[in-house]
Image (tube, rainbow, N blue to C red; front, side, top):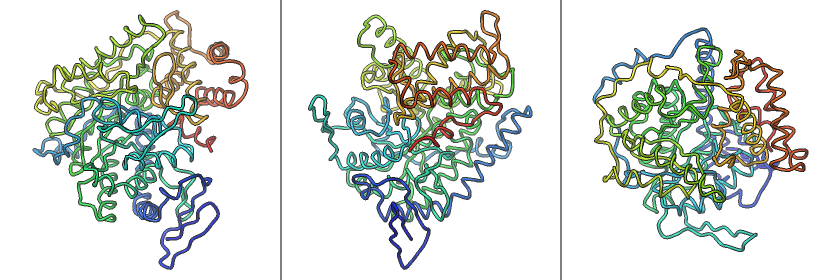
Length: 541
């Protein structure tokens, strides 16, 4: 393997793939850009990147069929898999009880606080809550390596407080980027490398031995999968990586986020493809709503109402939840619930109590439905989220709740909820979308806005709803159409409001103008950008 790092070349006699590191040098980067990690990355890229690109092209072809009027169905070609009597391999002891998992970005303080939180697992996120600057990605890998070895500390310069890991910590799970995202700072034989393979290869190569010594293993969440063939590719990557590193097959465990409408029709098949490495499925509900809008974006009969009214009690979302639980438990797999995006409201006790009541109700719904655990975004929600599971789930999980009553059809999954589109809904989408994008462009992918923790998934809903409402001339509850002129007027008004909320200096300087311009362009474009993070990534360093 030849490695070219920041303009310096270190050739080897047994030259394999040429790995070029284009990102700037930074402290401790050599600890994660190790020869072993880069060798594994080069091997995985050479073997699997062509198939990754084929699958991404297949997404485009599938979208063309949907645009032409086709609707998803359960696959005839995999009927035997759905009818078969099979189960996934058993999970390790530290994944048996997952009643509350916290998720968050990979900055140093967050990792320490999350691992110390009174939860079972922490999902360290290279994806929706991480703006993938080169600095964030490399520092994140360094931070996780320190966390695995329990040497991680953080000193708050403002307060002088030093953060360290406690004696008992949550089980670490890592979410790499999705198949669609590149890592532009690394090229292999002149080709851009997959962000997913980069995140996975570095973490696995650098930490699998330390994880084993700590009595745990390399556990992952897999995002944005659209079907079982994409899960099969991940399984092939797992097998190849384990073989290359001398690990026993099945050591890697992965939970798949069912956060696309197409994947909802292939839950059994996804578990089957990963059955040696599976740890279950998760209801990634915010991305799921985004996917529902995105896949049917060109159909006026698939317009969703205001985001705030698209709750988990809606028929299409309840059906998705019931099907996921039924499918998982039939196969001996965990069925994980969705994210509580609320955060504590410290300066308004009444509003805080109302927000926490919504969290309690949501988690009570999940445990009664049969979920084995749930997600939170803030340590302050841990006790509230855990209480319903502690009360109604005395064992480590609910795998015995088979939900034999469930009989979900394609029509159930595709039922469009009714409800109003309001001007306040329009304004909220603009306000949240622009502010999130501005923060993302500054390198922060997890943003508290209006008492909710917003990430790329919720920003995508805002952007996609505006695009679809505008394209189809939807009418708001006051009878007025959503036109370009109205969008322009509301965008100007909301920028003025943001100006008042965050201050003139931040709005006029930095990246706010860029964020507003990019958000406007994507909303008014004739074509729909598949992910807002793709054009935005071109603006990151």
